[in-house]
Length: 136
Image (cartoon, rainbow, N blue to C red; front, side, top):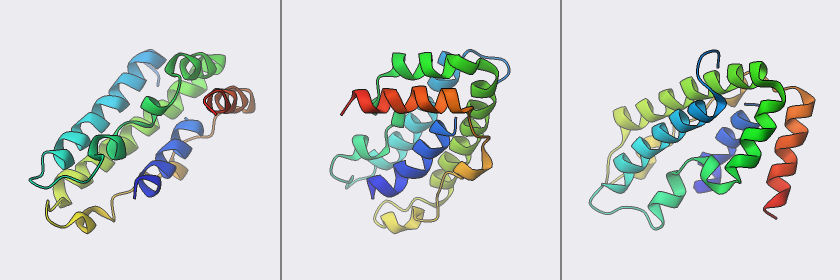
């Protein structure tokens, strides 16, 4: 289930806001995921490894490397992160509206629409890919 939940978001982030810094945008996205973790993991019978299943995809990467990669084109990265943040808010709202603690299938329809967000320039995508490869 974890892969199904994270794959669209990672795609959205890699495909990854006119105001706040890249660092602040990532913090906002992580805060949305923290809210999902609280919702799901506070259920009476939480899933095994609950926090790991619903934590931010940024928690699995070298955040400094990701921030440096996104800084390759700050404007495009912020636009994509803005979109990712909005998609993540919708995702959290879906969990808030649909989660039934004794029926985790109640949130199967909750998805992050990665196709809704603008693609990053190739140079940023390559830098992000290098960050992902560092952890392997």
